[in-house]
Image 1 (cartoon, rainbow, N blue to C red):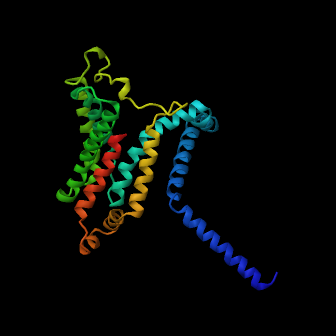
Image 2: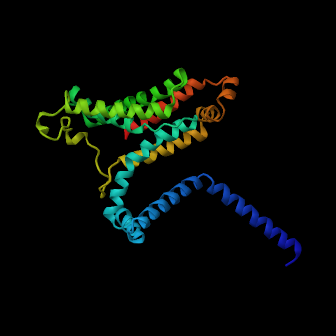
Image 3: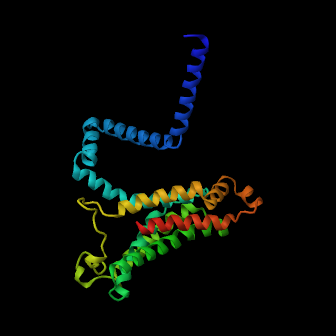
Length: 269
C-alpha cells in the first residue's frame, strides 16, 4: 500500500467518524441521561446492600421479558409520547415547561364529561369531538404559562408546575363533587363512558390505538419543527429572542403557539 493509499484510507476513516458523531449527537444526551440514571440506581441498591444485578434483570424482564410485558410497556408508553411533546415543543422556543400533568388532567376531564352533555352521537362523531375538546382544554392550560411568561415575566417552569396542582385539584373536586357518578360509591368517578366511545385495541394486541396516535404525533411534531417556516421561526426565537424581534418575528405569539401545541398534545394523551 502506497503512502497515498494510506492517506486516502485515513481520510475516509475520519469522514466516517465525523458522520457517525453527527448522527449520534442528537441522541447522545438522552443516552447519557439513561446511563446516569441507571448508574445512580445501581449505586443506591449497592449502598442498601441489595443485589443490583438481580434487580436490573427483574426490571428488564418485567418490561421486555415476554409478549405481555412488551404490550404492557407499549400501552404505558402511549400517553408518555404525547405528554413528552408538552416539554419538547415549548423547549423549541427556549421554555422549560414541566406541567404536562395538568394539561393531561384537564384534557381527560373534558373528554370524559363531553358525552354527558351531548345527545347520543355516532362514535365517528363523538370520538373526534372528545379528542378536539381535550386538545383545546390542554392547549389553553399550557398556553397560559406562555402568556404569563411573555406578558407578566412569570417563570414558565414554576407556573406550569403550580398550574398542574391546580388542575389536579380541580379534577378531584369535580369528579368527587358535581360530576360524580352516584353509583361509584367509595371510588369516585364520572359516569362511565359507553363502550362505543372507548379506544379499541390494535388487532390481535392488548395495546390501544393511542400508541399509534402518539407515534404519529411525534413524527408530525418533528416534521413541523424541522421543515416548516413556523418551526424555523420558533428555533430562532428560542435561540435568541432579541435577534428574533429585530428581524420582525412575533416572539410572543410563537411562544404561546408552542405552549398551546404542547398542551394540546398532553391533553390528547
